[in-house]
Length: 432
Image 1: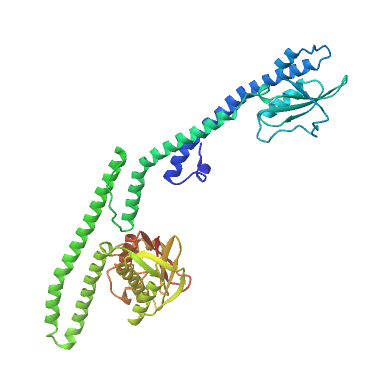
Image 2: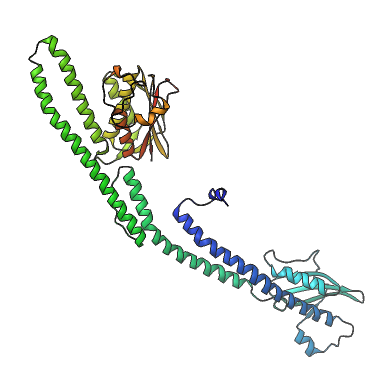
């Protein structure tokens, strides 16, 4: 049997579910005790006591009753003057007096000539009786003779002590859950590129998970560092022979030198692309509050000064976002560079909300087929049929660098079709 429909109404957070696990049994137990004990015990006792007082009222109003003072005092039933007490139009009780329902029902059923009953308070009951052989009579007696006294004390004690025990249990459970929330916070921060201090604590299982997370984080950081050192070392080693080649080529005749210099420039650009890719995940700068959309406008203006046909066409929302400015600038410039390399026009838009930041770059180029978009985000992947390689040189790292930087910020790079220009649409979406 599936309970998928019930999941929509359940708390999503760990604290909410823990509170539900604690509160539901307590509330269920109190309801069971209230229904079983109060209904069967107090209601039964109240009905029995009400029947006894009804018999006594019938006995005192019987024509054969012997008015003996001692017996009257023992019964503790008083008769009031009907002229001094006005009979209500209907039976009266306070809305929260649940035992009064049983008293009213029993007295009305068992007292001969019953007319009205008024449960004034917790101490006094008035009953109006009228028989054929007697005029209207008002009977007054103590409420404690008709119902069990203070049945609400059980409810009060049950609710108070149940709430107290639940609070103590929740405080204890919160201490057990705090290490889990700290572990979740550290993992989330690491996913967004922040390395927050974390030390395992709590139960044995939570400590084991914490140590596993620290080992995983150390391995990832070591892998990133090794990749960066490898690419940096290879790129550095290649610069020396390139410099020697450039010096040697400069001594050739002009008609022989130009094509070789272009090849050397292309090789230099490839090395720079390798370094950019190595720095993508190895960005050491900490995120800082960045004004949006002013920051995006600065990047677009810088590209326009370099002769790039790009415009900031739409901005939505205003505020600060936590960004690594240098890395994010590199990602946006890569997307703009790809857009103008394969198209003639590029448009940038930005949308900032309470939950996310979205930076969109669109072009009017040929775009990328839907089945090739996932592969386009991988390093060193060229999609020649989708993006004309003759329009520019590269090794397939532009989108990979932008995707890596988006992941460092805890976000994602999404590719799609541009509705405005008809080419490629690249969105960097970062959760705040």
